[in-house]
Image (cartoon, rainbow, N blue to C red; front, side, top):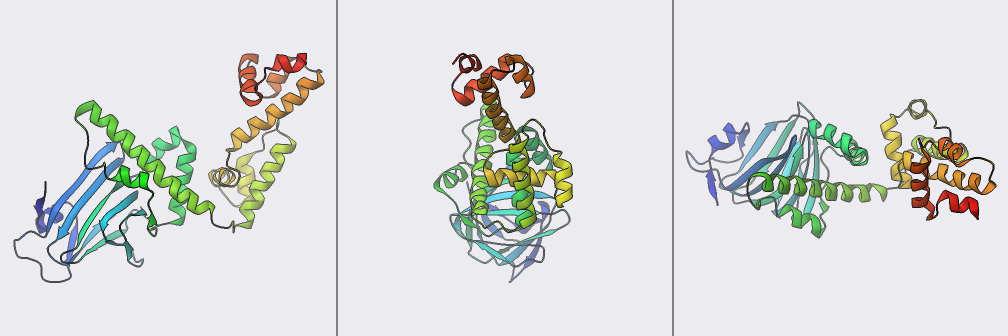
Length: 312
């Protein structure tokens, strides 16, 4: 349902409004709808469908937050701090990283219609993601380091479909909560994947970082039973451990931990075929607390049990 939005509505929402032309005296400033609801702690889903009845700029003092938004119809003009204006076109996905104490400015021309949908999240939600999925958190941090206000990328059809569902929840109570959580996480995953693909298409330009992760890989290949001190290796190269782990995953498509696990299982295969060590000793050498866990991991990797390898 459309509603009239007056100057007072925007001011009460914490915005400053700067006129670019004559503002209507006591009349609606915009017509449309704003929806802003919490999907999960620290993450909000947003959807707007508005037509401006005057020309103006909306200015907002920012707190630290990230956002991924799809422009569904019309155009969206936005500026963060002193950066140049960005125009996001229909069907494009934008990524915005707003630092605390910054200024966000959105421009509206009289008669402009814009429809957008997406998510906004803060550092609280990022900490939650880090606990659940380190790789997604790494990807978000990587996007944040490269883009304070990213150019819009063409959104794939699955992202557009998800965006159009933000304004139409299916019900109330627990059902709605589950729907919101699933929708927001699906949207976040699709948005991050799009930027990850874009970044991996760029040539690797940081020679020191490339040398660091190449050295790490070689050490894991040569001595899989001796985990190098990642924090020290990263520090000596001038990077954080998080950055090195993220770059390793981006370069080789596998986490450091999984790469190490595979190398140890490969060595375990050699030791089983040589027949010099007991199964318990090999499991312990590979970092497994018992032979059952080792056997499960070995079978998952090679399709054979350790016992059958030794028998053959």
